[in-house]
Structure formats: structure tokens, C-alpha cells
Length: 311
Ligand code: GLN
Image (cartoon, rainbow, N blue to C red):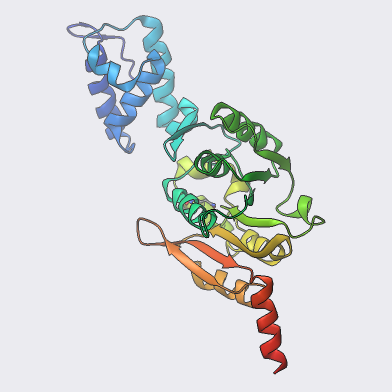
């Protein structure tokens, strides 16, 4: 890599460096070259992005250039910006991320919206018990707790490293009351009684054979365990759908993020599992069916179902 040390007119300033990096990123087909340059330079200089423009003609010190150059190299090697800076915004909250956790995606905010809608049904009712499976960075459960602090929150992940990140995020964002535990989907809670009013999850759902076709940012850097949905992409969704009904309270809801084109497969699994009454799907902002909503009938509906079967 040609090093930005000095320009023909003298030393580098913030502005000349941003211009140079933008064209360098462009020539390497890096998305959003200008904003990426700004984010990385602000990170290297420990400034806010806006400050770059307030100090645009400030000359760069050699050690600042060195620090910035190493960030550029990482991005050229396709490392996601969020892992380089160690943060990603989700639900207008700033989450710390590292390579043990999936970077929160904008479409996952639809899962948060769907969960809030379920929690706000019959407003004024008792506090709800909410469980997130495969919490990763803790983004979903922390967003929910920050919006609806009166409820009880539990969250699990099979990765201890991910749980450490989730706990750190929940504490730094003022949600220290979330209970985290390690385990494989519902295994740690399967002996408890059916007590959860809401179970929410963004499980791995990419078909195994397609992972290497994803952008290098994803398949080279993000935790494969958080992406790998086994052969048909539905492996984890299937496991969660078939086991969650035993842990849901009567009338409780299971909300799952799903991938493009997975509605039919998920619907078929949910129908085979006769424990669910309502089965519905919500679209994300791109119009893709993204969230599956499966509701366990409440006792009265169940009694009516059984009763009509008897007649
Ligand atoms: N939405 C993510 C992606 O497309 C996948 C997340 C997941 O498997 N849960 O990269």
C-alpha cells in the first residue's frame, strides 16, 4: 500500500487525507468510501465525525498517520467497520461488538418492533417474562429492556464470550437487570414450567452451503456459529419452534427472525407442531418477510379447540 506520509504540498491534513482515502477505498470496491474514511479517521484520532470538519486543515502527526494506516489496511482486508471501531448502533443505542458476536443488522430492528407490539398488547396487564435465545451482543434484549423496563428479561447464548459482551452492553446501557445464562437454545430452561410470555430470537438461518457466497465481510469475520442454519437454513429455527411451545405460557408468543424465502418452510414446521394457534409473518423495510410470529393458544382457546373436537 502506498503510504500517505507527505503530500506534494507538504504534510497531510484531515481533508487531504479523507480525499485520498476515499479514492483508495473506491479503487478497492469498498462500500461507502467517504463515510468509511470519515468513521475510521475519527476513530484513529479519537474525535467525533463532525469534529473532522471543524479541524479539516489540521496537519497529521506521524503516529496518527500510522494508526490510521493500520485501520485502512484492515478495511481493505474486508474487516467490517464495526469490528474495527468495536461499536455498532442499533435501536439508537451504541453497542460494543467483537468477533464473538454477529454485528447487529438494521432489519433486526423489525424483530424489536414486533416484540414491543406483543408486549404492549392489553396494556396495563401484569409484567411479562421475556426470553431471548442466542442473544449475541445483547442488542435485541437490551433494546427491549430499555423501551419497556417494567418487565423481566432473560437471555441465553451458547458462547460464553458472546455473553460477556452482552452483559457488558446491558450494563453500560443501564439495563443491568437482564439475567444472562449460557446454553444451547432452550436446553437450560426446558425443565422449568411454561412461564415465558414472549420468546424472541434471531437464530442462524443461512443455508450452510451459501455461507461462503456471502460478502467476505461476513464469511471471513463474523462468527459462523451465528450464521449457520445447517443444510436447509432451517435447522435452528426447527429446533426452536418444536421446543419453545413447552416453555411458553398460555397465550405466549414466539417471535423469530427468518431469512429471505423461508416463510413457507417455517410455516410448515409451525403447522406440523400443532401447539401454535396464530401463525403470522411481518415484512421488513425492504418488503421481505422477516419476522415469524407464533402464538400458543391460551387455556380458554385450547379448551374450546378440544371441546369442538369432542363434538
Ligand atoms: N441477516 C444476517 C445476514 O444476512 C444473518 C443473520 C442470521 O443468520 N441470523 O447476514
